[in-house]
Length: 153
Image (cartoon, rainbow, N blue to C red; front, top):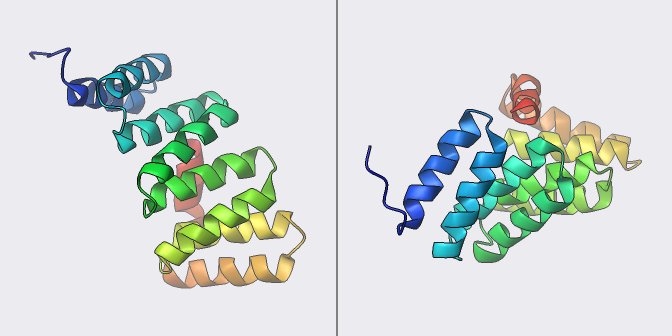
C-alpha cells in the first residue's frame, strides 16, 4: 500500500483503521497529522474525539467534538458524541442540551432520544427521561443494546 504523507486523507484513513483496531495513540497521532494538513477536516476532529473518549479523556474529547460541530452544525453524530462525553463527566445539563440539539436535527434517531432520556433521569427529570426512553424503544426495540454498544466501542 502506497502512503502519501502530504495528503490529509491518507492520515485520516489510517487513523480510522487504528481506531477500529483500538490502537488509540496511533489513531490520535494520525488524526493530528491529518488536521495539520487540513485544519477543517471535520470528521478527523470527530474521530480524534472518539479516540480521546475511549481513552477516558473526556475534556479533550469534548474539545474535539466541539470543533466538529462548529465546522458542521448539522452533524448529529458530533452532537451526540459530545453529549455522551458530558454524560460520562456527570455534566447532565450540557449532555441534555447536546442531545436536544441532536434530536432537533434527527427527531427519529432512537440513540439520541435514549441518551437524552438517560441524561434527563440523572438530572432529576424522571418523567421526561422515561418519555424519551419509551419513544426511543418505540422507534427501535433494540436501542438499549445498540446504545450499550456505542458506549463500549
